[in-house]
Image 1 (cartoon, helix red, strand yellow):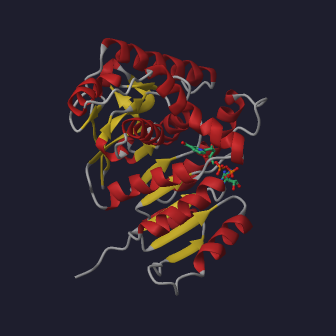
Image 2 (cartoon, protein in one colour):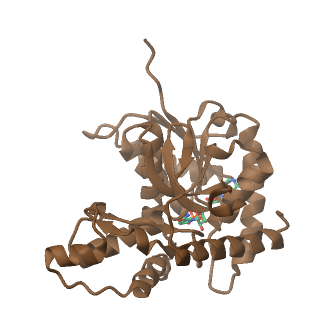
Length: 318
Ligand code: NAD
């Protein structure tokens, strides 16, 4: 009997790539991790840094190296974190989009020289534009490209609500959907704690939590900016989100998670990438889950799609 080795390649060894490397090591489900960066020294430095604690109890003794795209050949998962973030407030989102679409184009052609089997997790921003470009410019199987999308936004949303009600965020359900960015919206019609809408939970528990929905959404969307304002970049939250996705893939969990994917008729939308709940398995996106949205939420989803479409047109990707 042969045992399966799980191999992950991470492209991009910056703030996010290095935190992702650490999160994936700690997942203890992976036997080999390869880090690729255009700055080979940086990748080598990150690998050296994480490689020398294997004598510690609970430290998995896995193979970690700085590598090349040839390492994608037998990879199960490839995580793409390469490319810059917005450097300062003066830099436009469009100029970042132009740069990172070019970067993803090159990376996808390097990856597809070796594989069309691996499941690709996209982290690079602007997330939905880069996810769309990755699929469109390479023709890579649609269900094998997963944009982290609103997974992290949703985690933040659930934590904020959990704190307000004094409940573990794991028991709060609901999603942030649409664009990973300014037009993201909350699916208030689906929010529940222990299967009960918030007002019913309030009544049953005799609590008086008064929610200001737009304040909760603004707080959710503002966390990334707050972190960047204080430490200059974000990395641990997104690394934890990649770790969550990798676990769902490696264990074939069939977890329902909100991620960015190129839609194919869901909500009447196609040929656009944005986040809706999806079943994540060892095939990648097993199925999309087009949850029932209120009229207002559906309008917000369409608005998000229109907004992303106009950017794709400006970038001449459509
Ligand atoms: P960073 O500048 O620290 O690192 C980027 C790395 O990419 C650098 O090491 C650089 O050498 C490398 N790189 C650039 N072009 C490359 C190429 N063609 N091939 C290989 N490597 C290349 O940036 P970061 O803080 O790590 O952020 C990385 C990306 O992740 C950004 O686009 C950022 O906006 C995005 N991000 C997304 C989320 C999310 O929620 N989706 C959260 C945080 C950051």
